[in-house]
Length: 365
Ligand SMILES: *Cc1c(COP(=O)(O)O)cnc(C)c1O
Image 1 (cartoon, rainbow, N blue to C red):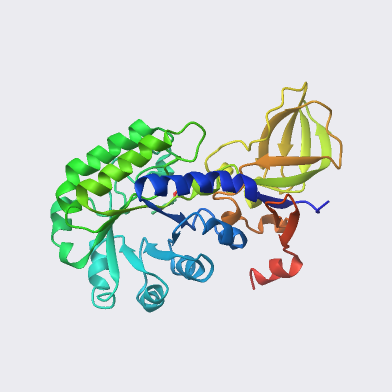
Image 2 (cartoon, rainbow, N blue to C red):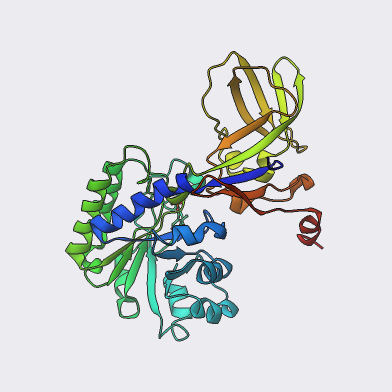
């Protein structure tokens, strides 16, 4: 048995998402690019690239990683590029999407030979969190004035809209697309490709995949464009767990169990969005608050029920630990960073990477 803590990526679970992604392409013609900011564990990119068309990025380092590790197309995007990044970004990408007209103009000459696009902010979104809402007031994410955009159409051949956020509601997706068409339709007729970004939960249980694909195809046909999707979470949802071990148990009015991991260091997104970790549901009579081993008082994974009292040495498994989780792991408190393991399609679990004291030392100087 592998030593905890470790993230366990299960390829057969990953495959369930990937097969749906490939199905959408088959039905609609829409290409899917993995959003590396959500998930960048490149040891499974060989498998993912068999079902997806490439990767998209939010920085120079991500675009280089995508070019290096993810076969297929490589899209470059960043909220803002620095002057000294541009040559390398262009050298490692097939398309570049600028976040603003001023960035497009700044790098107009440098990028004149490149396929270029512009991020458009339709000022509607499905986000429930202001923190993650691209359409929040005073948003810096994309241009929203159709008249201003019309003036740079000679320099771009595509648009990127990213206004969905974990949106599992097809009707809402459709409504927002109608809004985009009403407001930017005349411009859509002038481009060759349109990326609809990420945040569409189309690999989820019960999502109307056929209707979704038909809607994408309708959009592609209406404007004669190649549609791209940029799934992050949807590509890797429910594929990965964080495996931990109970180190201590306490009682202070509630039963507590401390594990060899930390929510702040290893599942940071849950802390940011004030959500509980997930475990396989159990209605047993023994309830515990599962806590991390960092010094942060609120380092709490959540409260869970178990069939048996927890013992030191028991193993626990938190679900859904791929998206925005592995990419955010950090060395807070010097807590041992989880190793990375992969359950191959034949069921064999393979240890891919371990992190040790040297990595901790190397992370600062
Ligand atoms: C974050 C992001 C994505 C991926 O979003 P998910 O919610 O993980 O699918 C795709 N495109 C852009 C531009 C993004 O900012």
